[in-house]
Length: 267
Image 1 (cartoon, rainbow, N blue to C red):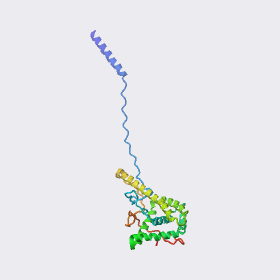
Image 2 (cartoon, rainbow, N blue to C red):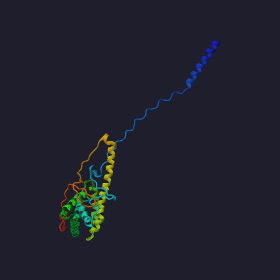
Image 3 (cartoon, helix red, strand yellow):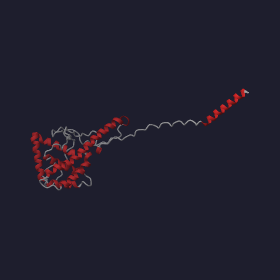
Image 4 (tube, rainbow, N blue to C red):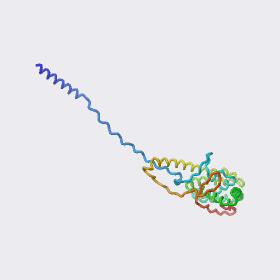
């Protein structure tokens, strides 16, 4: 009898355990595998402003924060003559539909200010003669080559042409005897275009260096855009507080204008 009771108890216990087992929830499913690592997007290498070449020689900035270009530290005569040179470059090189009128305006400028320009040319010759002695003409010619090539830099040409068009419009209203005063205001308008470009180019150079440090070993240089070298230091002209950069390009031929009385080189 006792044995039967024990068996009944065991059966009941097993039945209870089975019942409890039936009430236990199933284990949760296994967590999903982690997502694959995010692949870093491949950023494009920075492009130089105006698609300039990689090794562009940028005029330096002095201790006072002034960039030393061919338009730095000019006399009144140099300012007027550099404005004239810039206008000549614009008349020859700005070929957009909106800019073609500048060639005609430049001719009128030469005729309308012929006396002032002749006086400016003589004053500039005198300044170079006093500073450089018998060889002043060679120094002036080299400097003027730098001036022309500066204004003709291919990466800046579209911006320069736009600014030169505005300057040509303002010059139409400048009366005789006021050219020097006008040049002191108008040349800086053109110079600002180049100063902005140089600042942008230096920022590009920093960004490109950072890109090279991060991606060059893996990707290499994704593209190169060849272009002519508009600023190649090739001459040491002792002019001004800084040494202007130069290009191996000749001064453009003058535009013949009857009654102008001066040539592009001042000779």
